[in-house]
Picture (cartoon, rainbow, N blue to C red):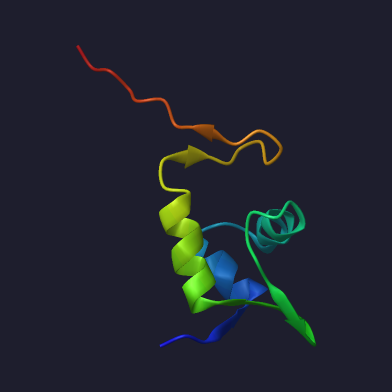
Length: 72
């Protein structure tokens, strides 16, 4: 079911703080809409996670692939 999630709920789902969610939106990595407050749809959350699997978001201006750890 597609519904709208407030930023606090998005942060909980992604396991990050709300400031990071606002930064993801600000930098265009996550699409939101404003209906009173910013909200993100369930389908956008799923799409975000799928298109960014294996990515490092520690620098939002320079998203990189996560380097694979080689064990010997």
